[in-house]
Length: 304
Image (cartoon, one colour):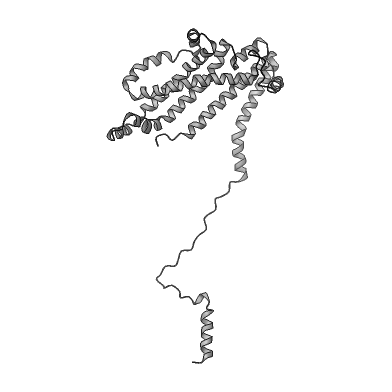
């Protein structure tokens, strides 16, 4: 074979096309072809707008209906200020909500903060007492039988009926109002926590007995995760009741607070300010409840 022929064969070999690669045998399965991941269908703009409409329109329509009824009553009654008059008064009031001209002349901001402080103190003491007591009542049948008639007797009593007892014991209006918050907040915490403990699956307690867990581990590892949703429900009910009661308690005790401020504005015949206070009380209560709902969703791991 000539040198030219060898050179020609080498060139052909070096520049061989992919078709020159040996094909797989007839009985050998072909390699699978990778498929592109399917694209998620985009949500049409019309569906997005419809979802926004369903979320926004009902509350806006409800508020519009409330304002319309309010304006109608103001036009017919005459003694109730209308929405525009209240709006003008609110602009002046909230231009400086934290002014301080003495204990009897303070801005609405200071009064709201003072009421929140009383609610926080009374609510905090109620949580420190009510939640552990709820665990004890739910955990031990004897304690449940002992405290059940006491709770059934005292829970229906109006919170304001406890205010004179607080004035008699503490001799001052401020701790008496805090005492009223405490006594009205404690019942939902006790009852909901006890119910949550009683509804823990018996299998969990059987496992605790088999493992010979002490009472502290039973509470922290088994009871607390299971009872937490019930406990948070009791806390949410308690904070709503506490914020509801503090307004009435402050009307009777006086001092600084949103309840006293409402009563003082009534004595000054400033009905616009009373309506503004109603909205402020409602907004603050709504924010407190939404914050606790957010907390409940954050820790709602239930029996996991």
